[in-house]
Amino acid sequence: MMMKEEAQELEIILTEKFGRQNIDFTFVEVQSDEIKHHPEIAVVLEKSVLPVTVINGKPRFHGGLSVTMITEAVAKLLK
Image (cartoon, rainbow, N blue to C red):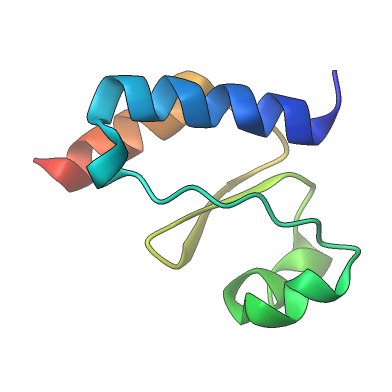
């Protein structure tokens, strides 16, 4: 499965669990000009394994999309 497809599945899971009003999900292709709009990602790319998960502007996870870890991190922030 492609990275973007995995991210789209993660977005569906998060919005179903926490509601669309609580989730602002963006997939950023880091090898495109789009990365210029996300300096918080650009600064960690050299030290990270893709994908990088950023929550509230802070890089939190890298190297895979763990639905469990990401869901738990979001749940803690929404408490």
